[in-house]
Length: 290
Image (cartoon, rainbow, N blue to C red; front, side, top):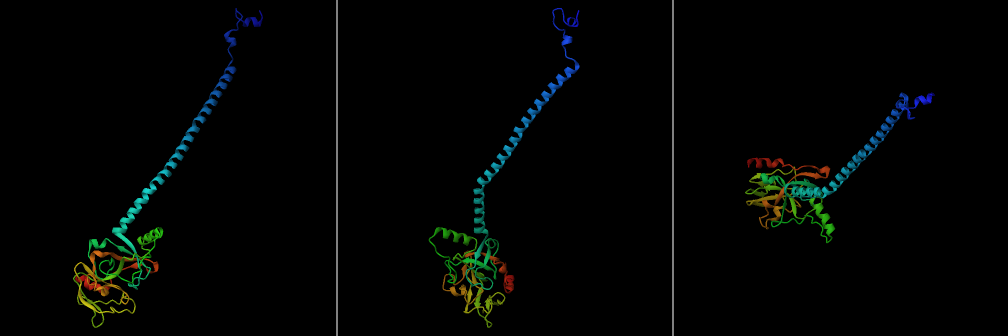
């Protein structure tokens, strides 16, 4: 019997043992299958990561876009809130004012800007020597005050209004003077040294009056300041149209307290003129007596 015949079974089919591949063949086949599986698995993993990275990038872009969209949606609300706060502060707390005339020289010069505290007189009374902003409507008017230019152009009017709110243009309605007499005080001018007297006490005003100015170029009084009124005078007495020159008007030249807008306490512009507006020392004796 030949070798080939020995390897064949009775029905001529090759034995399973002889048909089974050897160790090397199995290893080779297994290795090939393993590499194929690993290769397929690697491709699957890479393909699975790319969509995740893409999703993260898309999400990041979406969030950035949402933030930008949210900002533009919220911007009008923020602007409205800022305008409301500015209006509240300007109306009831603090406001900038423009100095249009020389009636308070050299304490305040033309084109100066001052900040006015509107709250202070809600918590305490006025004091002599303070510089105040007030309305002269119904009591007296100062013809030296610069009036804002009239215009029929709404854009120009709007621009002027904004300037007035920022204290960069005259309003023509408010004036600024120094408090000389309080309600019930007796004010007069002058003694033998040409000094103004308050309740018989002479004021030494040289520190704040316009250089070379006398205390008053016109005599007045004695006048008792009415209740709920104050007697006001400018520091440049030669040109100040103040209480002295309005004695024929309601109040006898004095200004009602409810017309006082607030106390001017600091000069904010120009920087060379910046500084506080303190009470002159000559009023200390009178204020301490109160």
